[in-house]
Every structure is written in C-alpha cells, then in structure tokens.
Length: 99
Image (cartoon, rainbow, N blue to C red; front, side):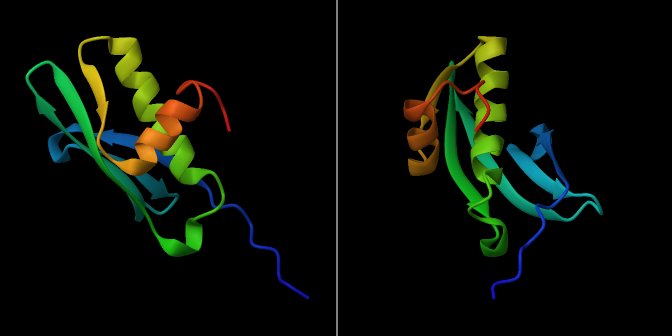
C-alpha cells in the first residue's frame, strides 16, 4: 500500500534582488523558484525549477500563476514566457485562476 504524502505548507515570495519568485517551506527552505530578467519593456520568465519530491502537487503551477498575475496587475512589462513550463501555464489558463 502506498503511503499518502501530506501537501507541504509553503509560501511564494518575490525576491526582486535575485530576479526570482521563490517557493519556501515553513522553515524558510527554498524548494523551487521562477527566474526572470528584464529587457527594455519586457519581463522574460526564463526558468522554473521545483525539487523532484514536491512535483505533481500544483506547486509549480501556483508559483507561475502568482508571478504572472502580479506582472499582469502591474501592467508595466510585456510578458515573455521563454521557459517551456511558463508557456504551458500562460497559454493554458488565466494566470490569476486557481489550479
């Protein structure tokens, strides 16, 4: 019988000095991130990463959706989804919607 894994308690924070959004566990450990860079009037989402053991729980999707919603609300930059996962999420649903 397979043991059920509890969904981790996490929060998503914007670390602007590092150019990334981060997924942090309750103890502050970073388990994933979404990196970006600016070019002229665009924000380019370049890479999404989540530790293997936390995949398949909607955490990465939530991370991307929050970052996209934030940027869309600001309305200051054209969003460029260079990362394939961001392309999938950005093209597949409204960034502000819940998974």
